[in-house]
Image (cartoon, rainbow, N blue to C red; front, side, top):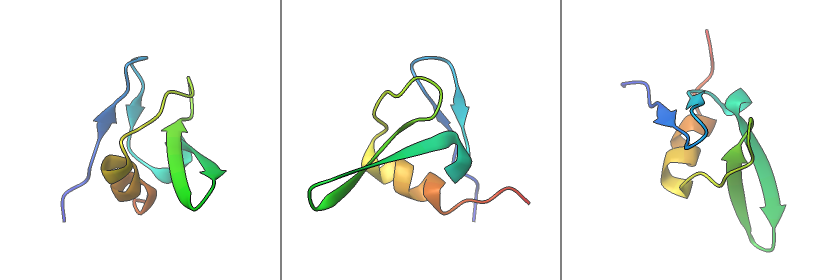
Length: 54
């Protein structure tokens, strides 16, 4: 399985769950960039949330 990487608008390269901030609200989870707080598309964020640095 290939590693997913997402480039945030602020320039941060997001690769792992540690790079994200989880924002709980209502019935769903919303993910944001850990550096700037911009929302990350849920499909990409869910993939990143399952990746762990090794």
